[in-house]
Length: 194
Image 1: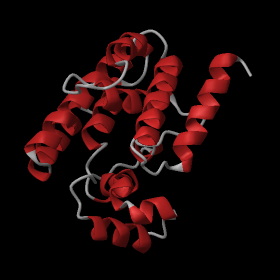
Image 2 (image 1 turned 90 degrees about the vertical axis):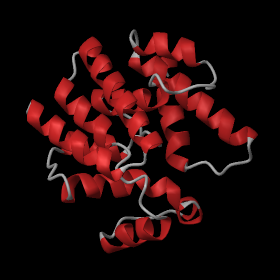
Image 3 (image 1 turned 45 degrees about the vertical axis):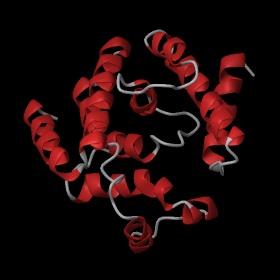
């Protein structure tokens, strides 16, 4: 990955996202790079993941379903009822198809940035956390504490975020993707040494 790759992707993403989503994307990119520096991860990969993490977000919902079906990607019942949840799966295909990304670590980080998964790589954790704590985020539970923790312990910050997400979804009667629950249980147990 070269600096020119980051620049090209940034210019293309700016044209494909609405203004609010693009500003969020820049915030995630900046935060992911800072976390990568702090935790010894690949900074350019973190930037590319940050830029591409929501590249499937502005795709119309029925098109998200069509893309997944075309590529034989499993769609669970929650995703079928809430196709906006498919943006990470669709984004991983856009990254490969439109942006010629072949690096599996980048693809996996885009794919898992909304639900997380057990045993995430450092870059997966970084983009998951950066998506939650980027500077444009406001009104999130425990946001300041999570922002501080993210630069100390990625696993603890991740556990705090998933706990807050589950609490929020539960309090609003929203459906919860099973992988989000699995992610929480895995990192809660890891944190507790179970």
